[in-house]
Amino acid sequence: MLRFTGRGQTQTCDGMTRRDFLEVGSLGAIGLSLTDLFAMQARGAVAGSKEKSVIMIFNLGAPSQLDTWDMKPDAPAEIRGPFKPIQTNVPGIQVSEILPKLSQHFDKLSMVRSCFHTGAAVHDTGHQMLQTGRAFQGGIISPHVGCVLGYLRGRKGDLPPHIVLPEPMGPTGGNMPHGQEAGFLGKSFDPYALMADPSKPNFTVPDLLPPAELGEVRLERRKRLRDIVDAKTRNFEASEDARLLDSNFESAFRLMTSKQAREAFDLAREPAEVRERYGLNRFGQCCLLARRLIEADVRFVTVNTFLTVFNEITWDIHGSAPFTSIQGMKEQVAPMYDQAVSALLEDLANRGLLDSTMVCQLAEFGRTPKVNPAGGRDHWPQCWTMLFAGGGVKGGRVVGKSDEIGAYPAERPVEPGEVIATIYKSLGIDLETKLPGPQSRPFPVVDYGIKPIEELF
Image (cartoon, rainbow, N blue to C red; front, side):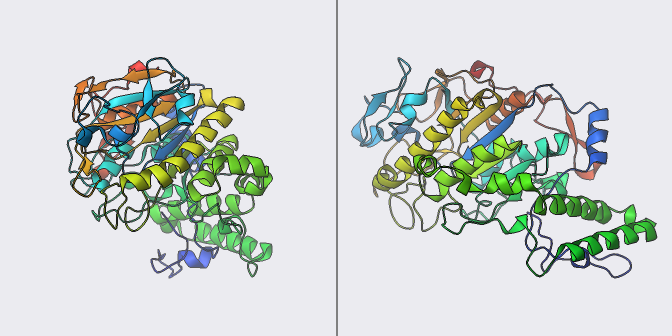
């Protein structure tokens, strides 16, 4: 995530820094210049005529498939766990009793019960693979699917094309990239990170307005200063630093002065009963904010259910501190999640937005089939479940099947690249589109031969 002020500064040949251009606090509102967008359009990279959006809910920590979406009631007790299955509103589909609200939305939802990956069983690896389609290797950081969308299509209005709520993922034990950045596309295509808790009574977005001491006159003076430098130093103007500076300045200025942005982030505009329906907690209000941002023409919103797996209640149910127990998942995590996501799906459907908005519920891996001695389940990338709704996805479907203990795919195994290809399909992006990769070699948006999960559509 790029910040406009801080220790790292880009210096021009005249000794001027980015801080000389703009002092507006910590900003991540990064956009696409019109020149770059028109160039991409001219190359045919923008496919599909109907505009669609995505809300990616990333279940950091990884829910147990056996305790949520893929229960095995006939398995031994140490496999099936403590919860009972309940019937959804679609005949023949059952889920866990700890998700009663979502069970009534399976006419909108479809599940893939046969996801797997072959990477290391660490959170960071799964985060990368399920948000970019590729693992971090050879020093190459692949871009998040939302960043690719921003690169190819730019923003619709004043708001950035890709926003992360409430902030990017924090430490999860691997000290590797999490896949929530633009990677080799460059910092100018990083997502905008809110960096605030929208459930707080005094919730504000400091990036929307300049500090009190920085008035419109000073902003205009800095804009003129940029224009002078652009005209004076042709070498700088031709540099990557100059292009990054120009794009960042334009994005920041538009965001700060935008009525559209202020209104989109203003949760006080929502009736109290609506906010309560989502849940008055960080995740619930992030889901509500995601709906508002989609309504305000943001193309892609990533919502992190949690920010780290350490010392807080998460999906990471190892069973002992600093992690979560199965009971903690039942009493805290599942009710919060069940309330917020069901409210989001209901709202999108009622407002006529679900057909044009894919809601994908992803995770980095699943959990071990056998309950461990601490009463929890450990990391298991060999099989887990993910959910999709809207954006062309048909509800009431189950794709793939796990074996009798939820350990391995038994039918239709699905890899991370196929998940990313499915998102691109919903967005109308041609999978043959090439990105300007490292060392100037073209990079396909997904690896050659990877196809979407067609059974969802």
